[in-house]
Each structure stands twice: as C-alpha cells, then as structure tokens.
Image 1 (cartoon, rainbow, N blue to C red):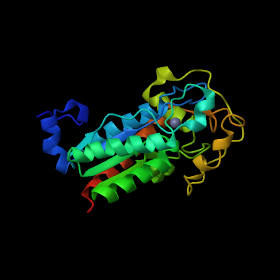
Image 2: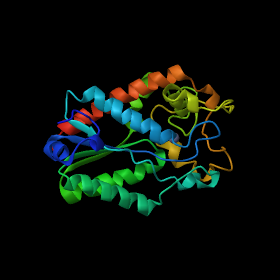
Image 3: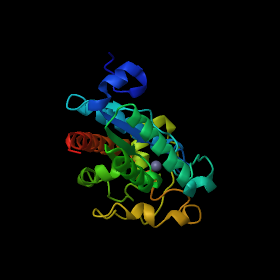
Length: 254
Ligand SMILES: [Zn+2]
C-alpha cells in the first residue's frame, strides 16, 4: 500500500480500502487571464499547491487524499481578454456533480472542494449542498481566501490591496513566492489603492465583473506592490488555516 496523499497514485484496491474513512479533497482552479504579468494558470497552480501542502501538514491527524486538480473553472467574465478557458455555469455545475458522484460511488463519505478562483465560489456551494443532501454524506465547499480570511488579515494581507482581488498584489505575491520565473516584468502600477475592509471578503468579486475590460484592464489593484516574502507569509498562513479546516470538517458529525 502506498503512503501517497495523491489519489491518482493509488490503485483501485488502495483507494477502495481507505475511502470510507478518508477525507477526499478536490482542488478546483481556473485557466484565465491574470493581467499582462501573471500566467493564466495562476489559480490552478496556487490551489493545487495549497491543497497538497495543507494535506501534508495534517496527514498524521486525519486520513486524507488529494484528487487531481480540475484546471478549468467558471471564467466567462474574462473571455474577452483571451488566454482564458472557461466552462459555462451549467457545464461547470454538471462537471462537479459528475466528479463528486464518481468519488461518492468509489466509497468516499467526506469530501471537500477546495477552490482557488472567485468565479467558482457560488457554484461550488451549490454542488456541495446538492450532493450532501442527495447522498447523505459530508460535502463541503471552501474558497481558500474565505477559510484563511482571519489569518490573512492578521498578517496584513489586506493592506494597500484588494484582497484577494484578481491578479493584483496578493496573487502576484503568491506567484512570486511559488513560481517567480513565471512573473513578467515590469508589473503594472495603479494609483489610489486602499486597504481592503477586514470585515468583508465578498465585495471584491460581486461588484466589478462587468467592468473587467473597460475599467480595470483585468487586474484589481497594483501588481507592482507584489512581493515574494509577502507571498510566502500569506501562503503559509493559508496552508495552516486550510489544514485546520480540513481536520475540523472531517472530524465533525454528519
Ligand atoms: Zn486568480
């Protein structure tokens, strides 16, 4: 029996044997424009890293497996920029329902969608709710910045930043920490960026989607304020929070 935390490295026998007791996490990302300076796979790369690192931190506490990351998300609001591969609302919902039911048929009873892209947030909540009700199992949907919100505020990630924003200084810092060779210089600058409201993490994605191209050129604050050290601090805070959320959810009752 392998000790891998990656579902795709197991055999069917391995997976079947551990499924009933194991938390299975499906990371979901996006392939979409992230300004002129970040790779289109930013959300995909980030959420996959976070899921695997968080699982490594808690694998002695709970049995946990990470499924292959779904790279594609709901990104129609970015299509006009190019460099974007998006599933429509109906397709994305059905894709996650099908993948979720596959995992449930395989014997898993405790499942999490860990999300790395704002446009997926509402849809993953619906998927988790519908599958939990239909199959009477535990199914949660978490966007990493909501799980880690308090920890991010504590390390000051909201200062002079639209947190989490899109392709702004927060995501730029994360990719500078993770894959610095993928960040294109010079990074754009934007004036007039203020602190994010520490109390509100919903506003960033709900009030700007119609203006991505016309007003903000595909990024929400000032990418030139990104910083690798800041990125490392934020990623560490997120990994810890996400790991704790995995443990709490898996140990909770039905
Ligand atoms: Zn992003």
